[in-house]
Picture 1 (cartoon, rainbow, N blue to C red):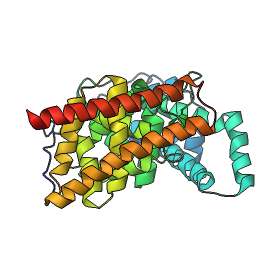
Picture 2 (cartoon, rainbow, N blue to C red):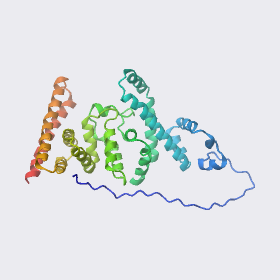
Picture 3 (cartoon, rainbow, N blue to C red):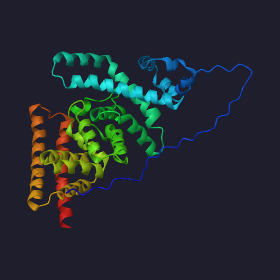
Picture 4 (tube, rainbow, N blue to C red):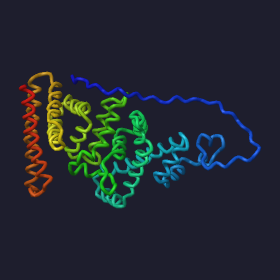
Length: 359
């Protein structure tokens, strides 16, 4: 059985109580000043312009607004804020549906079509508009973590798991220097920890939220690390390291219980390499492996896991070396650095492991 890791329950989400105030009606004999903005709540009384609009037309109006204009418009009332949030979620759903069709398609014509729209930057512009509005208006301004948690949950919970993962990436995923989201970079090469920092903090917000099950976080992560295709394993490992001991252990322990030893062994090798590259204490990785060993009830099971991990060190090292030889990458500084980091991390891990075992 897996030992349960204590969750941070220090934050409780409480909604502000609504106080009803008795309104006093004053009668004026002079003309009323003209109102420039009418809220939807008031529109139920006065039959305003916004109330008479079909939802589709109202969305078309929001399509024309910049992030700043939409931010100011959402401040008019809670009802307008709700409409804007609904609109944002609708846009995210449309984008996910369109792109998911292309990602899972084997048709060359569809791939060339999405390549055409990628060049135009149509979808990427909408993603950035969505990101800017949600981050600047709903998520980042709050000084208290529960407020950010509340708004993040409001944005994610209406959608299925795959859509939640995609929306999480749009909101917190790495940005390229030109300002677009680095979807493909996560697939092709290892990224620095700064590129994954925001994403890890958002995942921790969900992990610390009272009432969100570990299985939900794991499901979102499983969807996240295959968008748009399976990530480079170094990026998966770095994201887990940034998420901290508790969540990292929870993910690996779940895989161990389900018998996915080869998968977690390969992931642990990359976690150890990330510790070496990013300057973390190797004792952290050793303690993580020791915790996972305790999941197995018998000595033969623990030995089999350690043996699988040791074999994976050799396999990953061989893969990196063969990649260098096959592609003539000996002059490639990044590949050579990866190979050196892998060898150094293996030596440092085993030294620390033996030291902690013998002392």
